[in-house]
Length: 92
View 1 (spheres, rainbow, N blue to C red):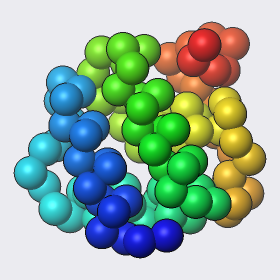
View 2: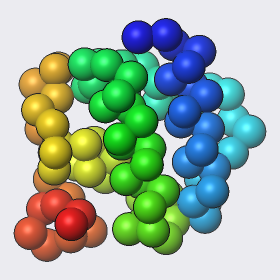
View 3: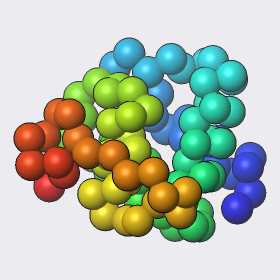
View 4: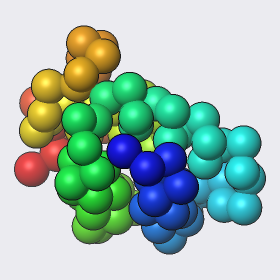
């Protein structure tokens, strides 16, 4: 995966209320986390699209972002997470 493209995709999360927009350190940390979870840029795009689809009205944090990803894909780093926002563990 191209780290720059991943950061660019993640910057779309700035549309979520409370996302720390403009903080390059946060975007780089999220890009490293997403890079450890995702197999390819298609999975990153799905995750960003899902997070910004209206399911989340505000930035839920990296743990919930991981949970959102795990609702569809098996993370390549093997670290599973379950939603603390959606009781059944996934955002439909």
